Image (cartoon, rainbow, N blue to C red):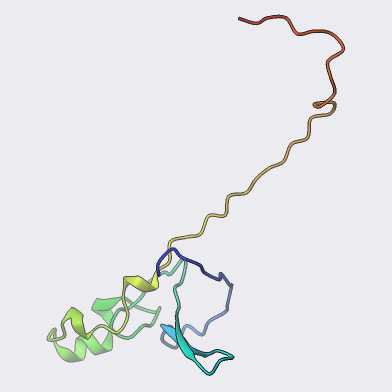
Length: 110
């Protein structure tokens, strides 16, 4: 559901642990669902172990495998990276007397 309804929150995370990919949530009607998490402004992200302290080629899992792991073995991926949310900031400028009728007619400017 990329780009659909979302909730944006700012959190502090422990960078010594892997990123959380999502959470199971319980609803009032005894149903449960899955909420996938995405992150803005990720620096390095290892797709093998989910840590932010190194990238794929420096991962202990990758190095121990001696290059035998395939991309199908990755538990993390680019789908964790959210596009940076640019909230359009609207600036309101009020012009004094804008809605008042002109005291003198405007000249044709054509």
